[in-house]
Length: 332
Image (cartoon, rainbow, N blue to C red):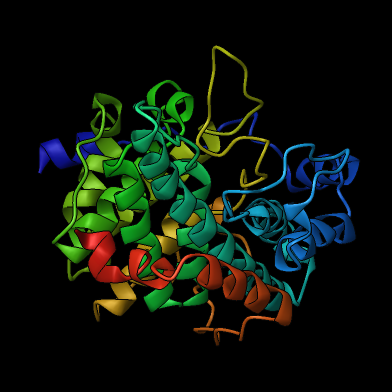
């Protein structure tokens, strides 16, 4: 018991933790890229406009690269929806919309990472397509859990493990920036599923709070979990700030999650799916409304015409597309 107390020792709330007002102010300053600009790029892919050279892209897309523009567009907007949820009664609907865009985009990115490896190998080199962000992929998986999208969380978790195990992750982010919260969420996913794993670098195992939470997240008693949840909330407030070459944060200013308890709500949703009771209330400023409780599970919206068009082209170009992205293939 003494060891558990030490592992979940609280650090208190960071006195320099950004206020909600300061987060909103930073978001308002931008930079901003219009939806229409981003959507036009996606339409170009759907309509095969990328087959022709143009000033913005002098080299035609002769390899039928599966353009993943909707991933970046959705990541940017989904993070902002979460960050501003306190003032947006439609935040659940908007988050659901952008997560569907994210899903299509990340499938595109993952598929081409593997296809690029095949092309590179055929050309006689061992270059890797290292462009899969573990930070944003895990944040989006947690967002899917917040919405109650169990099947989406499962697919995203296996997809991310497959990217990790095949070496498709961004090298600097993975090896130098040490996103312990995101590594923790992926490790909890692996523990939840029981048939997937990844050998993380040493940093992923050196946070006592997360080691205790990983060991205890299935405890039947929510009271037994509370000390670790509160300690993890404290840690979140200390993992906020502006990044530099020398300092990285799990919940940095780039993605505006300084006051969004994605890792806590993720754990609570997984416990709910396991039929376990959650604490009635977690008394911590990180869990301010609307994050003071899990929202009801939200419906998964149909893909809109544009995202359907993205998948239509990808499947036309690559008959094996759905098979590569299937759960059996990801698990292998």
